[in-house]
Amino acid sequence: MTIEEIRTGLLKKEFSAVELAEQYLARIREKDQELHAFLNVTEKLALAQAREIDEKIARLPARQATGEELPPLAGVPCSVKDAILVEGVLCTAGSRMLENYIAPYDATVVQKIKKAGALIVGKTNMDEFGMGSSTENSAFGPTKNPYDPTRVAGGSSGGSAASVATGECAVSLGEDTGGSIRLPASFCGVVGLKPTYGAVSRYGIIAIASSLDQVGPMAKTVEDCETLFHVIRGKDPMDSTSVESKISNDEFLISKLRIGVPKEYFGEGLDPQVEKVIRGAIEKLEHAGAKIIEVSLPHCSYALADYYIINMSEISANLARYDGIRYGASVSGGNLLATYMRSRGEKLGAEVKRRIMLGTYALSAGYYEQYYVKAQKVRALLRKDFDQVFEKVDVIAGPVSPFLPFKIGEKVGNPLAMYLVDMYTVTLNLAGLPGLSVPAGSVQGLPVGLQLIAPAFQEQTLFETGKAFEKIRTF
Ligand code: GLN
Image (cartoon, rainbow, N blue to C red; front, side):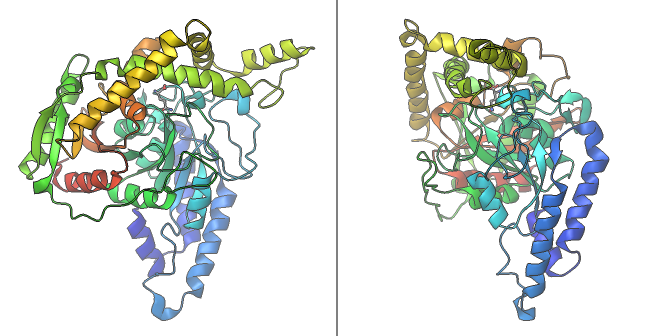
């Protein structure tokens, strides 16, 4: 159900919030054995929150049946990526290192969705510490693609995307450092937004790469994504990088929209079947009245290399805290150094170790200037590419992923092949820009997402374009 359908049903007393929660929890029991979208189902929490909503509805005066006093997510079942803290609930980030970690407080985004009346149904599967594009790097096993269980759901927020796609929840909170919301949204046929860097608080999120990380909404429709975004966004005194953005109320007319199509996004590496769906989507927008303009992002071929240097460097710094003494699981080695080595050696997975080692190398004396500093300069060039394009267009459109959802096991042994999946998504994290993935069509029954990109803090343009596209797409 959509947020609006849930709200109307609750107000008309077609069902209670407890009945609704029970239905969704039953759906999880039915589907998740095979799908593995959830690491932990928070049944008691969801039911307690549902009872509160039912009490609130019972107290509404009869003439108040419009529900103005009902918060925006009242009774909406929501799953939460396991990198986001929910007080009193296990939070593993997909890692054995945190297999026993109970979150001592709520992330700001969780406080906000609780206050807005959402029912938290569980914590979703992810690649270990968000490192991966398929959830195969989860220490607890992969999430399957709801459209074909032999294929991946995408990652790292694969559990969030799959849980929305199968109706195990209505909406989800994901996290995107280099595509982790948009890619699984594309692979599972749902909508996902990576907000502008700073639009949403990162307080209470397990840090991966702090200059790239951003929490965002995932849902079945653009409208639901928009509603959830407005609940979680805003300045937070606990995160100094967060800002209060102004929401534009300008009238949106598709006939006035200028859409940039970067020629570099349709070159080498793009599966022709994916290209056909994306080009078809852009044509539909053109028929609806939008002006299509070919643009160029000349530095985007450096984005992937740039991203992986910055990502790994920041990971090596952020993950230093998991030493078995200060944070994380501890495996005693008899003395301090051996305890550090055994804890990290046994509790972190191969991809995490690879990135810590490469990142430490890139930051070390003698190499720092050559790698990290240079990567920051390239990052500035990428941002400039976008600034120049946005002088001529309102949004940019292109693919989310160069390929269709691939087979489980197909790429997991080859890190470079896995990194290539991120070629269209990481650029936005480097430039700090918002990006929306909207289902655009399918190939052999597998979903393909269209990526829409806007200038910083112009999420509203993405929502309006996305909603207009949902009306004209045909599948
Ligand atoms: N595929 C990206 C990576 O492995 C995803 C990161 C993310 O967004 N958490 O770094």
